Image 1 (cartoon, rainbow, N blue to C red):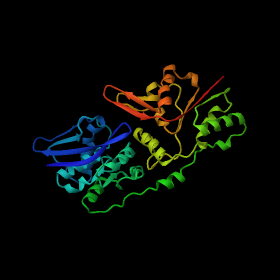
Image 2 (spheres, rainbow, N blue to C red; image 1 turned 90 degrees about the vertical axis):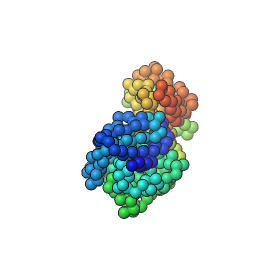
Image 3 (cartoon, helix red, strand yellow; image 1 turned 180 degrees about the horizontal axis):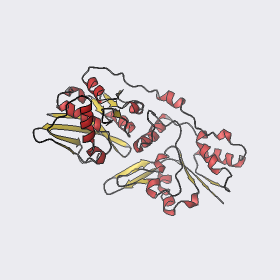
Image 4 (cartoon, rainbow, N blue to C red; image 1 turned 120 degrees about the horizontal axis):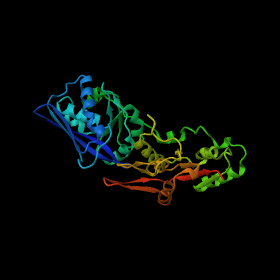
Length: 351
């Protein structure tokens, strides 16, 4: 018994399709996952088994093999729980085989069968515009994030049993809708406003000029003179994010998992203020499997370095390439990834 379910995974800030193949054969009970699965993917077998049983379905006591194709790219995260579970139910005849070919599934499963949100939904939804799918099945908390990409219809479903009923045609679910223009127009305003600043006319004039031309800025003054206060209010006088800019910035926050649940787009330009003890990998990005750093999280926004002389020299030296090129390329033995990093650098220091 063989079943195939479509899902997606991340490679940098982009996504690629993953075909989840499920084979149930005769033999001693065994559950193996192949296709370069990492820790969270390997542990999915226990979550999937409990979710299927607690949703009222029988778990096959046979030799089960899960293949995540393409098999030569590392797979990470808990988003494969739902497609693996649906693949098992399809292979056992609970779900109609033809229905799983139309949809892309992503979601983490709890032990009682509920579908939990996962990170990186927006890049997959954007890439799915070019894949031959009729829709995306996501957790309710991820529905707005998936629908903002204006790709295939997004169906928000909150449990494994509800997904089975939907795929079998027993129930109908209306596609989730999000109005991107209205969302940007009515975006949440910042808690701090540049209009609140009294005095400091010279500093305010310099900040206004820097904001108008997207220039980098260095604030020098004694402690308590308002350097940090002015810098934190700078995003409120920058132009509003366009839809494409908001989409690019939100993709990076979605990958790292910093996008709040049910929030489709970043409402205002990002403002990142790392502590001066930050490492070079934390600022630029890196790790065994490279992840975005603070310069990429500040994409289309502001990177604020308070107490500039306290930062390590090698960390500051690494800012040269992203400031000149607007991107960061991280090379490791396993992979090479490029992250966007177009930001406005604002620094503050004492005389």
